[in-house]
Image 1: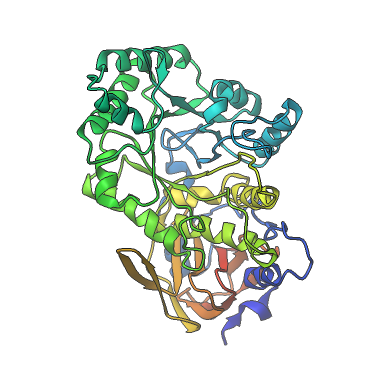
Image 2: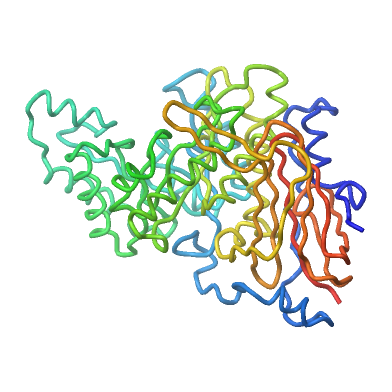
Amino acid sequence: MKKTLFAALPAVAMATAVILSGCDGDKSKPQKPANGFDTLPAGQSGIASSEKVNKFFDVGPVASDIKLDANIVYPRGSKFPFSFYSVGGGSPEGRGKLLPEAEKLADQNRILAGGATLVGPQYELNKEVVDLAKRGKVQAVYTINPVVDGEPMVGSKIFDKWARARKPIQWDKIKASIAEQVKAVANNPEIAYWDLTPEELRPWRKSEMEFIKIGAETIRANDPLKRPIMMYDPGHRGATSLATTCKHLDFVAKGMYTNYSGMKTQRVWNRYSVEQMTGAREILKREKDLTVLALPEMFQQPKTAEEEKMIPTWVRYDAYCSLAAGAQGIIVFSASKRKNFPAWDAYLTNWLTVCKELTGPANIGKAFLFGERRNDLVMEQTKGPKTVEIAKKRIKKTYEGVSFVNIAYDHMRYVFVINNTTEPVAGIVDGLPYSSEIKVKNLWGEDDTMTVPEGNWEYELPPYGVAGWVIYREK
């Protein structure tokens, strides 16, 4: 007899459905992260009475295999990278305005307490980012923005301006400015990443690609710790273009703003976006040293009250869809307060909920960073659309209606089921060894654990619902 998710426990899917219905009237209420705040069962080796059960669990990396510094964010350390752009930045009064100091500090403290392992990029607050990281005992993304003849290089249009004026690019001054900025702060261990600007440089412009090459070389030459370098790429970039812009960098970081991009009801756009970044990595043959960062959206006000109730669902889906597709960190754009954006608080509440799950005591993020993807479990969808399509200009691609991820890490399994459709879905997860010693525990939602002696259980998910479980043995 199969265990049904609803019968066995008041599970993730049901909790998500409550959010979708808005029964409690709280537009900012996140998915209850009961287990995301708690330590998960410790991975153990060889404790079940069945050799078949032990063989199932004793695969993949274990925590003791990870030799990276536990106090530093990935890729130099083992902490899961989770950050926000512009922590404490912006103002509801409009562009160019700043918050009162007390409000800025309160926003920053809220994010620091919420589990972020990084702060930044900070844009207008870049000069304060090292002090902010020190105060929060986290790390920072520090922005490098060259200044030439007193003029900061802002946007790719600076290259157009020089071209119109027939002004040669002054590479020596660019290098000198970058070197000066790096040397001024390089002794701060709080800096985890360098953020090279101007952003959104165009892959078809040789001079702009030369800037990235020279900029990255100059940063590395003046940074004794050789910390990794990122640059923001716009959301429409495909794998080939990203392979050009990221050739000399350590990250591929493309905007993937689902609602802003007109993909509100085609949210599998998150997966497509990550696939462009992993595709760039494959083109460059840099699967082991080019880190993929998801840059999801937090800046656009939902159009209706009903849409505002969807924020918890949108946030959770965007995060876990991206991670399932191969993202290795999340930098949310952005924590900046904006005019006509009252949903800021609801978005932040829900992003911090996901952040705590990934970086807190449960450390779910480490499974995505270091775990081994396995195919020894199966997921059969029994209800809902079997496929979903994205269509945007020249982009057209079909994906499965439900994504399934099975990760082995530290003698446990992490299993995720993600509904990519706008309709309810249901199905069965199967393939566990028959044993009453195997436990299946929610990663969020109600803090419940079930035994599945016949090796399977059923799930039900609402539109864009996400379920996650950790599977372990207990004699």
